[in-house]
Length: 168
Image (cartoon, rainbow, N blue to C red):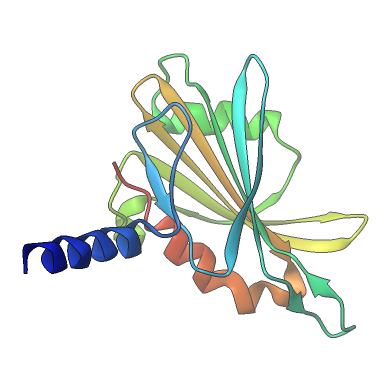
């Protein structure tokens, strides 16, 4: 009976850990829905980045659009989250801010953050993004959720539910 109980507990723990990812060099974890896969990591002297891609979503032209989420961790140089977000937004490609929110607005578990909903246009057309900034100790974290505007309404709730999982 003890063996069956241990196997059952192991299965439960495995299911709970499915899709959970430790954000590099932080205590923070994030959980992804099943349709998302870890596409790879990159790093240089300043930052570490992990990229996640979703199964394709069909647009009106029949193209398979692959939404993505990038997790970037780096030194925050002792900045508070608002200053960190202002500095890092200045270093990012421009996007038009449509909405500003804090974790309390979404009932998020991890509170030391600020987020933006925005849009930008590149060679592939118009995109919608959520860009969330967190501070965890001496580390700053940027989470960038990106898809084309056309399929954004199909993916937005997945972006929001994923961002809401960020926690220690």
